[in-house]
Image (cartoon, rainbow, N blue to C red; front, top):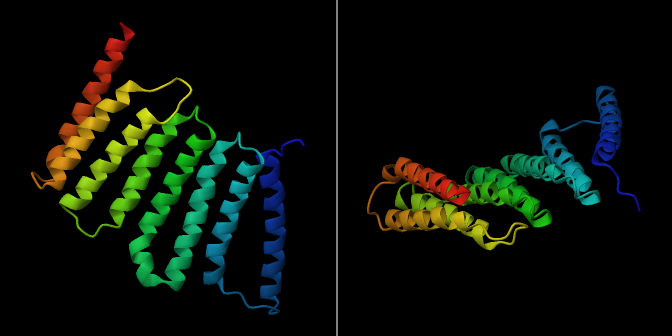
Length: 214
């Protein structure tokens, strides 16, 4: 069975949605039906996201469709939460959006291991999603942030890749794990480590690349 091109699917489904929208708007203008626009916006984003996800399912080579797919579904969920669960939306909206985008990148790696780089944005976004759920703004959230980054680079090293293990990922993983431990123990404020950590990680990576070329 020949795989359907995502572009063809998106055009076909998009055309059907436009026709359906035109009919619904006409019926609304004629007074035959009454539309609740606030209730329609969320499902519209969700349906648009499902179209992209369907395009990926039909042809997994087009991994890019996962990103708009999960983002649009996430926006639809957030709109629904703001409409039906305002108190929960205040807490979960950021986590839902960042988490859905993070899952998209993780699925890119799972389905296409050649794109191992997707582990990094995926891990960072999932870490930020978790941090948004922490009410404490000091050591706990900072420690979880660095711990998530350490785990992300740990996965870059551990997870299978076409080119084998990436040894360089161990260096930022260890450094970030140490920083996470110090922050969680309350030894210093989070801001005291941000720039030094960035400079240290950058220096380690540059040295590693320089030594590797010899």
